[in-house]
Image (cartoon, protein in one colour):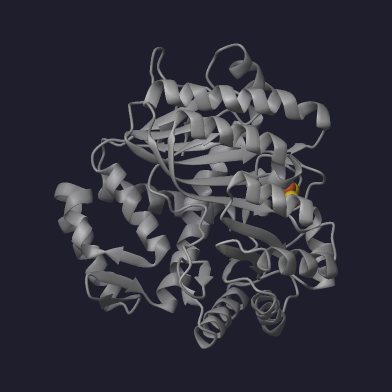
Length: 431
Ligand code: SF4
């Protein structure tokens, strides 16, 4: 999108969010006011960010740091201090799921295990533990460590089985390593194994995408998360990180590939569980982002509280120093006003591709009428169909949501992340 396009999309989103959420919501992240502490919570989810990577993939926008053994102990101590900080303020909440992402969690599993032990001591863990894994790390010993930690859902970042794609993405392994890792995880009796597969890669054909997801299913993945090469590398995050190595395919290509993926999944008993995700059989849904409320631990980790978002400092050293001296890792906060929490809930239900209509009144209060009116338009446009008490997105509906997410929501993330990478403790970030 050119400069004019960006300005236009900013204007449209600002007008839309003002109309939907109201003028009281300030779209600005600021350092928390002195003395501010999170409110007590009865039930939430937990996210642990493990930032270390052995090598950096050129397209990756996530918060990461080069792996060095000497960093693991101070990282672990800081993460445990942060768990304690959360428990001291929100109380011993019920934790309905744990998600461990990165970075590459599998290069620091002893550290992860120590943090999980502290989470179990300070909170009441009731749900699944999900973890992101990297093909290069998976062997029998790692699988045993995951089992010992109580991990139930595993996601393997394969991205592609095709040599050219793996080289272009700079993943640092070949298809034999990826296949061996997936077979081992699939045969290890986890509740579910998800395979991440990318599409819309430069010069990638529809048949190559379908071959990748078919191969993942054949090797035993019962969930497949497909996502396009995000636009981050071409935005200011990308510029700041000098990510210029790849280019984005045209909308027509993404449309064709997304349709083909949906068709393949439909014909092979994989039901759609989110805009990007599909699963086969009666397994708990693997998802990293749709949880309704979570606390985050680690550099750059965000938390979704009942009264707003908070975001940790992105800088690993600043994060460790602050926590080791008894301080907080939270750099920024955006409080909710009006029915913002309800609209945020509705946004993620769109992402789930299923909107429970009977919950609208409870969650959105007096804005439920406005939401219903827009949902009727979505239905009349053919982007959703009624299914009992749910409104279910159709395949075109899911695709266009993916576009809206690309051009609008990711712009917010981009603004926030760019500023958070430039300064450890930003003064304010308008999104
Ligand atoms: S994609 Fe994963 S392995 Fe690659 S740099 Fe990003 S976090 Fe590290």
